[in-house]
Amino acid sequence: MNIRKFGIGLAVAGAMVWASSWGAPLQAATPYYKGKTIEIIAGAGAGSGTELVARAFIKVWSKYIPGNPTFVVKNLPGAGGAKALTFVYDKGKPDGTVLYFGVSNLISKALNPKRMRFELDKMSIIGLGGQEHMALVNKDVGITDATQLVKLKQIVTGGARADDPLSLEARLSLSMLGVNFRHVHGYRGMPKIAKAAATGEIQFFTTATLGYRVVSKNFVANGSLIPMYYHPYFDGKGQQIRSEEFKEMPSFIDVYRKVHGKDPSGPLFETYKWMLDVNGHPTGFIAPPKVDPKLVAILRETHAKTAADPAVKKGRLASVFNWKPQSDLDRSLAAYKATSPEILATLKEIATKE
Image (cartoon, rainbow, N blue to C red):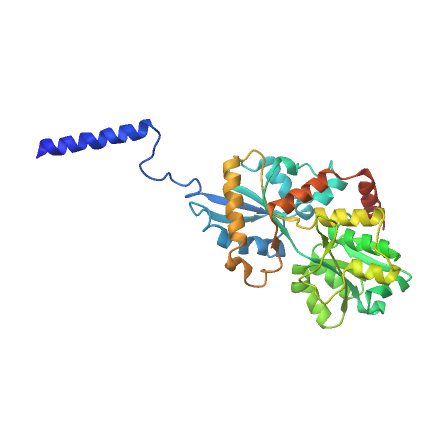
């Protein structure tokens, strides 16, 4: 009996040596992310809409990643997310355990290439999405319809920074309509911008879906702010895409047609389309340079599955943030890389106009 056991032991040992020599594991390898923690460096302050979107997403994401890693969020606000993005670009560990979450800052990068040190094409985009944008006006301006904007002698717009995409959209659209404006920037966050507009400190601004639902909608309800139009995104053929969030509101294109009797065209409109294309899905998860492509693939595949999970689509944040397929992201990055000198010159002119 002992001899028999000894023989069986030799057979098993031999099988293990044989399997090992051929690189065939006897059991599945331990997933890379098992026992690991993924740090999310959020380019916004605690409690911000950006952070809320990130936290809602990572609650579900972990279950799709083999090994079910733990997620932690660390806030690093500043310069509209550029501070955190630059930190991840410069110092993020390339082991798949550090990700940036926030806006991609491509518009700011185009306007200030030397100030923005990160190079997005050297990083790995895991997933980007976006919100819809719409413009509002203070009730005391005395108009109820966007076509009446052209009757105003001047209107005061406001935003976070001179190169803030939302305020650039407002200024570009007003410039195309032929509305004289004065711009004020330096407001820190959408709550302060919306309050300034509601109290008459400024008169006109653009907000995104989350900012509208959480802040501006209350001012609309009490009558201090009046919706004007939404800024449409454009498909690959340059045609406007109708809003799902603001179905009852005209697009800027609709308003322009009513005012001028034709479709917009020219340098301002080409810049407007370019900016909405590049900035149409500006926010998401980005990995630092030199991350192993296999880890990038895992993160991208599981990100896509998470984005389709019903648990992510429920609640107040559900329809606020629309994750985009990689093909859309590739098209936007291609548009960014192919920025013409004319578009850049127009963008700089609008950004510096006060």
